[in-house]
Amino acid sequence: MTAPSDDPMTLRAVADAIVQRAADQMRDHLKQVASRLDPFPPFPGAVFAYGIEVEPPAGAVEDIGCVVLGDDGVLYELQLGLDQTQLAQGADAMSSRNEELVRLELPPAEFIGWAYRAVVAATEVLEQRRNAG
Image (cartoon, rainbow, N blue to C red):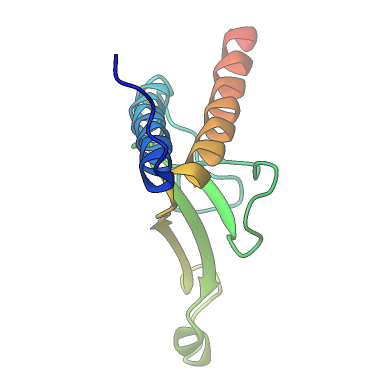
């Protein structure tokens, strides 16, 4: 076994590698958990989007909107809106509605907190299904 380095950059690099490994493992785990949800639930109030809302972890960045776990096990921001051009042309609100899942790109340390909250949300859905059936 080698002696620990006194170099601060080496110490930081080791910590970064540990966090990256944990984030990669959580990505794999999220995909496994999402694959257990068959059928995958539609997002409440959405017409086209499927996803489970993920509550923010403690200390989460406030500028992230509605985060959902997608059926592919990936975290997304659900963006809802209306096509103002279609509305101005007389289209109804339902047909001019936009639902877009935008993949979240988070630093590994931040991703771990969100991923854990996604696992909690998904396993709650699984538990509800188990208890209902």
